Image (tube, rainbow, N blue to C red; front, side, top):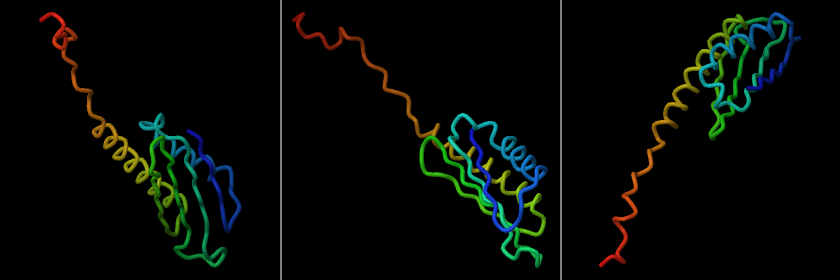
Length: 120
């Protein structure tokens, strides 16, 4: 699972980068074999003016489309990342379960001698 982190409106610090990757890996570890790539966009709409404008947008690109999009916003960017990662994990798990449920087992084939009409 490849994680790409893109930022807008501030500089990405090492602790923030580590926190984001750790939370995403923890939330998505059960289904990581079904995930091609995760794109995270972190930003601050108002910049240094403050306010509840920090956002985290997560796009999870699965082996089978469609992708999953999660968005959250708030004052504390770490809390926003935590909520978005948790929601992403739940949504991916649901999608993977639905895909597994949709796969129907093949119909058992009757023995070949049941179709052999040349014996008559």
